[in-house]
Image 1: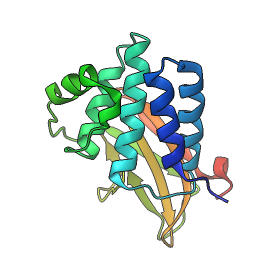
Image 2 (image 1 turned 45 degrees about the horizontal axis):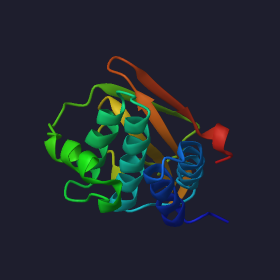
Image 3 (image 1 turned 180 degrees about the vertical axis):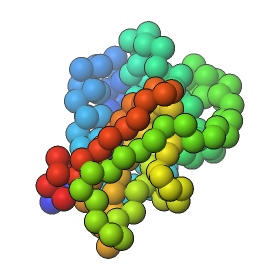
Length: 168
């Protein structure tokens, strides 16, 4: 039984716009947990990162720019209009550069045929790697999501994920 992330994201967006930040954080956390069992479209992933950017922006957290970058990288033309003109202008100013993969991703407990998906796109490099910042990392097995988590990685980090943590 996997919850649909879209109503949770809509609630998080509405709560953030209304400055109910604790409620927005809770809804966003629930939406993120649904990524452990669903394969969201790039637009849904972008909505997550846009809502995260809005919350961090209202908290004056500098990571809001990272979240805007990730949203634009995942779905370059999508923006949630209800999040307002200030966030939209910041989103429009984000330039999505193509960075060489710099962060190694290690999967413990994966099986032959498992597919690593980062921000909705299959990772086809070996060893798996991605760019610094926020990411939705999933493992798909026979087209079903068996693992999913939002991770935040800094340049020089290595991300180690254990599928045993998810019961996969």
